[in-house]
Length: 177
Image (cartoon, one colour):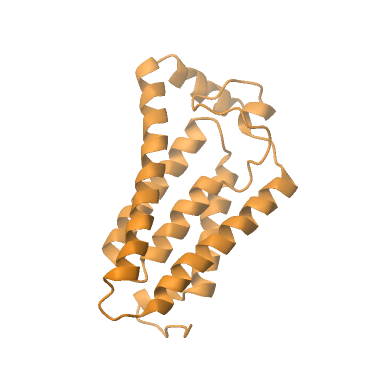
């Protein structure tokens, strides 16, 4: 689609915008890693209920899911927009293939849904960061829209299956784990 190339060219013609996108892409990623690490430390040392099952789930489910998504991406090895349409992306990226699903988007939403077990407010903040990251990855030319939607959808399916958080948040039956 010509839109990817046109959007990227427009962004690249504004050096400040290129810099802002690259900084935001990295900043959102690092902020999410720090929030997740902080959540795990809190769960290990300060969880008032002493419920270590939440901590174990919070490490095991995202970890195993990340490995599975990474292997799936490697096997599928879908080309990135800049490969398909032959342009230089606005984001600093030169990886070949491994576009589907977006692992960045999968990871940030997996972290959000993991945190939702204990803090809906913090999870909503991470979800907002996730939406911003998804948009940045698409307009930066490194992912197709389907890649970021798939990353979100996989995280959501895993969260509902493994945590049952959406049921708990909306007052339905919480799945026992």
